[in-house]
Image (tube, rainbow, N blue to C red; front, top):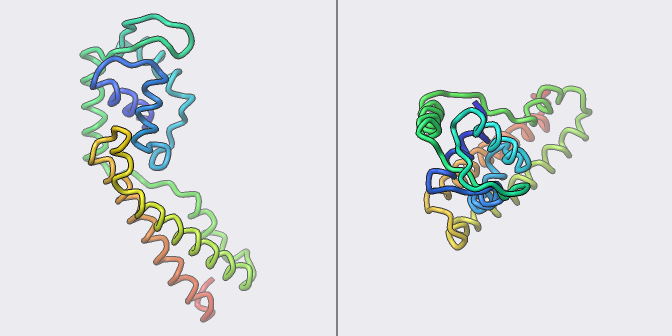
Length: 176
């Protein structure tokens, strides 16, 4: 299952769209900040799902101007994927965990500096997210889209708390 697939299908629930309109819809939601969607893959995904019978072409156009609509199979696939996401725990892949794995390869001063820098970055990012609540609605995003920001903020705050604790442990020679 790919995130891009469910996002494309979900944006077409409200009616036919071309690739550019799908992309703009996802940008309005801020999907690039909480998914790994590559906006260039939208056009490929639309064509592939049309080939699979999940979408139908309702207006042929050049490039990204082809307009697609959901088929009944596409609606079924959307709901199947949606319920899968609600009922399955999947790992959150964060490349920072690779850095943690090799923290013992850094000397103490470098590790302390890295933890402080990461903490500052996390604090600034959390502050920015806190200020952005409600801003997406001015561009047409539904109210519940802020919940993705709240979840993202909570995960970043958890990482910030970890960084602060790790910093203290490194300073006290308890880590690495």
